Length: 253
Length: 269
Ligand SMILES: Nc1ncnc2c1ncn2[C@@H]1O[C@H](COP(=O)(O)OP(=O)(O)OP(=O)(O)O)[C@@H](O)[C@H]1O
Ligand SMILES: [Mg+2]
Image (cartoon, rainbow over all chains, first blue to last red; front, side):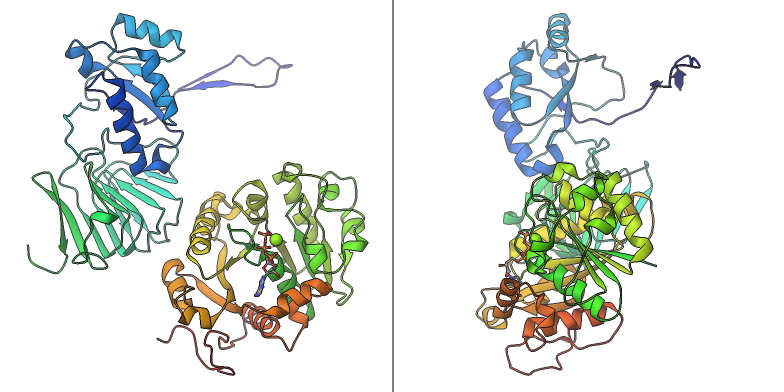
């Protein structure tokens, strides 16, 4: 859809309205303790600093309002900005919260069905499942398999809406994300996040595990947690009862 | 067809300018008309290493701003008449470079030169970005240490995603690894990464290994690219690199600490 401005012969064409869809991470709050929010937010960001740097963020207040808890939007957005994120919207807020948001020049969005569900968070989960916007180097259509043959270098980020297959190495400092499974037929040194929108059935496969971080549906392990029985080996990684299982790919399981 | 080579690294002080001067001279000595451009606006180093600092009248920024023509700004090398230097400005900062301006200068150079060597500044900011943006080939200069390797990896990501070739979906930039300041003794002592270690992390085509060598400092003090010091190990290593780049098959040297050990072909473990 585009609403072209009426062109006059003397005026150069200066703007055009277009409708476009962006995916933006949503922060679903389940506590109003600003101290705890700040601490947990910083912890999450530390896990994927590149991913979160200058990222826009929508605040979802539905949960806390359901519980009848109040929160000061100004203080909340202060914490978020301090963490290096940009609040670009509020949803699920009450009349007063919405008014406060608008005064802070933050747009108010309505909650629509089929959106991100506010699951209860367990320890060691990265929530909300970050959804990409145009910041990733590659961003591919839903349900499709993405095949990449070039190395993914430090600083590069790949997001696939379906499965992701990488034939080259993934360097330390690189980040690969998929809503489905991730296969790396080479050395995995960077961060790999499968099932980023909550698919707990997603798996990660790689030929040589040296990852900085692996995550399935938000359940993660960092390099330190990987012991020598799985390091430098061909492995598959999957979720079982909310625990990450790392297994030698050739063993029967 | 002219080819634009960027000499880049991410990390500073690894030997980009030394390498740019050496390979530009090497290519010219092989009979190819070559220009070497200093993209390190504000610092100006290349003209010192090339020994032409006293002949600088106009610079790269003057040409970009159309205050001088290319012919006015290019300095012909005193040792080789097929080699020209386009010096950087000392009085401006990197903001003086524009993508459009750099593109225009390179297009003009392409009409007259076979190889255009771009000496990139350190970092991944504007100057480094413009130095690599129009490149056909990239010489990624890396020292055998973790931070340099990591920065090179980062730069390779930028080459693969932010260059003109990447943006226009053309054939990607050809990337080559140049491992410099290599010291087999220190590798043995475990103080440095080995060629194999670096290759394992970067998985990149190795164009050559340049040993840590006193001749580099001597040459730069006298303003003569080290490749002209044909007796020196670093000079020979750069000569090998130029020859390999031009398609000659030369075995790798300077990887082992046994003197005169010529035949270790890289990759045959
Ligand atoms: N093979 C070598 N052996 C010994 N010294 C070397 C070698 N290569 C470079 N050097 C020295 O390292 C220093 C940095 O070299 P150079 O200026 O070429 O690096 P650079 O990457 O261009 O630096 P910058 O990032 O500041 O532009 C110089 O003092 C140079 O003499
Ligand atoms: Mg330099």
